[in-house]
Each structure stands twice: as C-alpha cells, then as structure tokens.
Amino acid sequence: MSKRVLIVDDDEAIRKSFTLTLEDTGYQTETAASGEKAIEMAQDTKFDLIFLDLKMLGLDGVQTLRELRKIDKDVPVYIVTAFYIEFLDQLKSAQEGGIEFELLRKPIGGAQLIAVARGVLEGPIVY
Image (cartoon, rainbow, N blue to C red; front, side, top):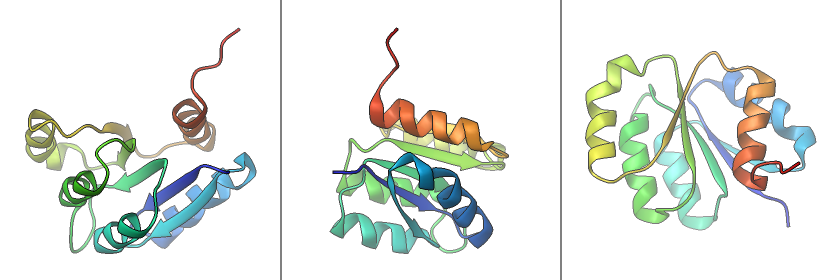
C-alpha cells in the first residue's frame, strides 16, 4: 500500500509543483486548496504526511494544524511557508500547547521536498 501525502496550499501552482515533484516517488498525493478542505479530507482519509501552507485565505495554517491534530495527533505535518515570522507567536503558542509540527521555509527545492518525504515515510537510510 502506497503512502498518502496531503498537500495543502491555496496557490494552485504550488500544489501542482509539489505533486509533480512527488509523482515518481510512488507516494499517493492528494491536494487541498484550503484549510477547510484539508480538514474535511483528513476526516475521511488517513494521511501519512501533510505539507501545509501557513498563509491562506479562510483558515490559516496554524488554525488548520490545530484542527488536523484533533483528527490525527500523530501524522507528521510540515508547515511550508515564506511567512513564518508573521505567524511566529501563533506557532510558538501551538508548540507550547503540545502541537507538533516541523517548519520548512519556501522556496523549497524538489530534491529537499523528496528528501523530507522519504525521510518521514521510509525512515533514515542505514549504511
């Protein structure tokens, strides 16, 4: 069974770029254009990894993260953003509240994206 990756971003170009980058990895990718849609999808589907934009219309990434954690507290979530400074207080508050996430800064290259996905979904490479 292939691993399921959810890509949440209100920018269609970013969603397509992430999907194209991950298409040859064998992971099944699904996308959501909003936090609300991501929450709806997470209620119906178990994801193995979520890439989450921070600055979105409607629910922002921190609000979406809080709701996603109510559904699945263990799924790895990587917030991918160029605007983390703007949300620093909210991110700190979430972290202090026991909500786990990782932070990746945009722009992110394809090789880095694949490395993160493989590291999370397949574990470290042992030589």
